[in-house]
Length: 121
Ligand code: FES
Image (cartoon, rainbow, N blue to C red; front, top):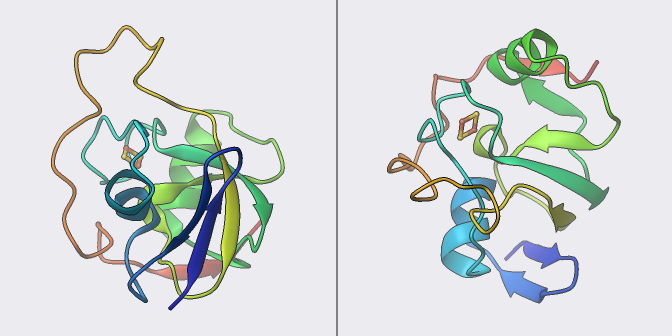
């Protein structure tokens, strides 16, 4: 089972292949935002990788990060990542303090849109 470490919160065992955004909410119990429901539109599901950042990303992730001008190293979209190895992240986009009414729409089990994998730029 892959281990998800959330900085300051602890370590959590995650079902292999589970979407990172779902693991952040369901396994780690965080108030991680996911406003668009995990479809690579909003970037509110972003996390900062401490360790284990995947070398690949979906084309959708690359496109939306570029469109929103997100260029900081280690910032990734948790809705576009599968937990297929140990990873350590920092929670940086939370419901608390956001002014939003909820964390976001329901997130499907499968990465959406259907992933086209590209090397991280
Ligand atoms: S981009 Fe909206 S939840 Fe990931």
